[in-house]
Image 1: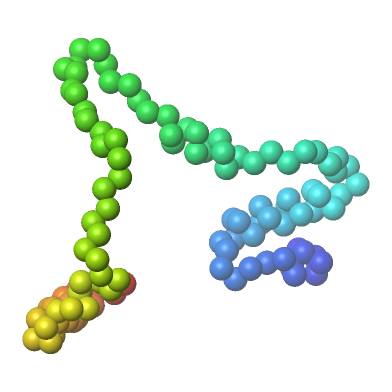
Image 2: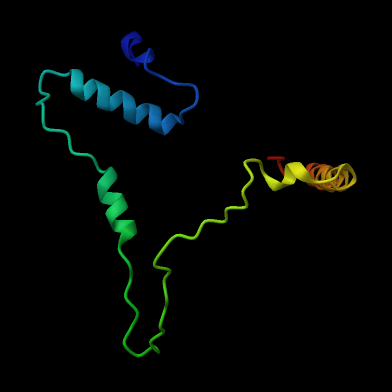
Amino acid sequence: MSAKTGFYLDKGTSLEEQVRRIKDIEAIESDSFVQQAFKSSRDDTKSAVAQVKQESEKGPSQDISLPMSIVYDDSGTLAHPSLFLDKETAEELWLNRLISLRQERLMGSPVT
């Protein structure tokens, strides 16, 4: 690895990603590099995920009704309802949350 390419390494990337990145950079900097139009593969993956698999004709057909309009739950308040809880209920909810976080931490799972 040359000193020139060592500048591009990141501590957060894996060794495989670093090697691939160095090879890509060296290929771009070489004399045989030919500039091409950029084509993103981002749209290709989205269209592949967006395709819906059709069910076989043997299965029973189901009628699905979709809502035709968006219904908003407008309670007339600007603040979240949890802000209007009484103090005892809020403390009880917090203690239950704190106990569950402590139990998760003791069991070895990371606390999120």
